[in-house]
Length: 257
Image 1: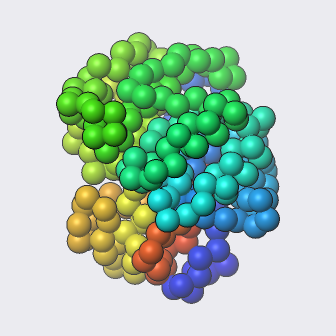
Image 2 (image 1 turned 90 degrees about the horizontal axis):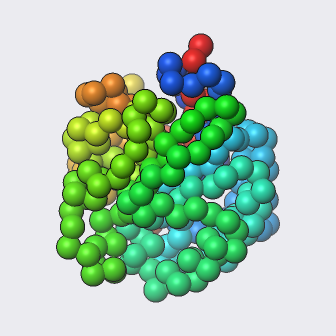
């Protein structure tokens, strides 16, 4: 369906990224910026779309809940996808703004979601060795009483870069920091697609922490050091209507071909 400006129908956005670090394809579904939005009864629409993708991994890149919404929809989603593939999660700013953080931690544990807090996990996927790392959102500094910077915490994540190295992080505006690392692909959200987009003219009018005419809002960006950054427009607009900017579920296939 052609985007008619205010159409907020869920879309599936497919990307293919080539890498000589994989032998067999890896399909990743990225969920970002849900803000506890509902998609059908008990999240049935969103769950069915994720099932149809048959993912090898599911990444959740922050703002899964919202301080102004019930956490119930988060529970429905996690319960519905927990047996599809390993799920890895990092926080966004809204988790730390929300008084329901303890409830979210309980839901993550109940549904076997792996919360990555400034750490790396080395896993095997389809015969490939993969580093999956996660950078906790900077708002967590205040929640957990931390004093370290995102740069310090990112530099402390240890991984072997001869294997495919993937990073989950909420914020695309940290691109300059990411490109100093040796990660192959960064998965981010937060920008909400720039809220208002005009095809072929405007890549977004405003984004959190990037301000007006943001640089990173949607798609795959080529950074220095051969790093690619995937930016999802997310699944909810949160207060401000989307214009020519559908909510999206991102599907990334990493292939050697």
